[in-house]
Image 1: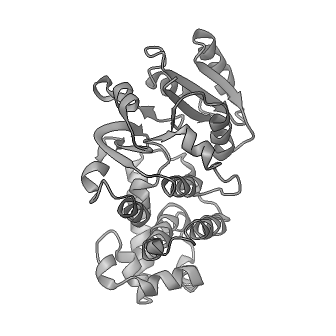
Image 2: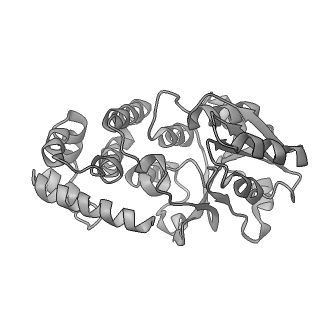
Length: 324
């Protein structure tokens, strides 16, 4: 078996069949699809089992609630040389039917493709400055986690995952995929970027990262501190980790913190005074964050919290328009 596709499935009756069929499991006997139902209360279980009866390479499994639990179950039972992760409302793409040829011949430990968000292409191939240097790649991943540090859109060697005893942290509610990816790439000797789009991500208002959660700050802090621990033995990534902290901070603000905007400016000020954020803001030079995308961080760095809050609120409005 060449490829195991692992799909966590939770209350996804409207999209799960599309996701399964996007893997081309019906067309390629080298593909198996492991669909892990993690606590669904709709017709998800029924639909997966109906599909599995049509093809022995569609595997139905169950886990406790949570994407990490589901992915870990998939890793445990995967039979193929390579694995990839697919969310239930997204689609796997096979440009020019070249995926099988690519995976058969690949000598690398990780293969990273371009992907599509709604109708926009994210061209990681062109964005990546040095494609043959793992240290440079990891730095760029840390400094731009929203583009690079998704667990999907990549192919992993199952032997390397098992050799490193890697699993998704079941203690993390946010950024668990980024944390897993960091530990994986630290084990890689070779990473390959390809020009083709291999994943179609659906931007959804039901996404976990777009729902307000009063525990969000605490959960993100747990993830950031875990990544810091993962990188403790790698001083070469210290500055890039500061970028990672600030990029995660931006994500928190736009997708959670300012979704409910009452009295947030004073709380933003308090958050910026936390050690891990204050240290990152102080360490990053102005020229490295003086871009439109990072402008709120400039205001936070110089304690102009009202200005930062205003931009974050505007970006929440813009994001809401994109998903309508």
